[in-house]
Image (tube, rainbow, N blue to C red; front, top):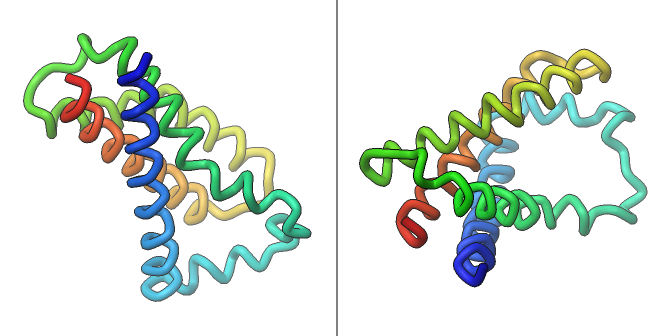
Amino acid sequence: MKKVLLSGLGAGLILFLMSYCGLLAGVTYFPELFVEYNNPLFNSDGSRDLLFFMHPFIMSFALSWFWARFKKLFHGTIFLRGLEFGFVYAIVALLPVMWITFSSLDITLLMISSWFLYGFFQAVIAGLLFAKINP
């Protein structure tokens, strides 16, 4: 359990930094995508902002537990194990969530695609870290 918590915390810190840097880079290099966030659907009064910033940690702890439970199924180099872990997460969790989100909310295919790719990338980064510190 200690490895799950420590690797989850480490991955959470890395994903948090990656998220912040990715946001800054995204606004700079893909401003047309971020204009879509002016939609009233995304307006918040600020009372739940902390929940938004906790996302990388919630995700990393869940992925760390999943890794500890199923790591024996992932074979090959650290890179291949991390990549396969990201693919499994993307197909099992992201695809259904993005499907229902796109079908039920007034958001564009570009936005939902960027969320899918971003989640996949996060899972690959977490998988690489888990394969390295909790083989």
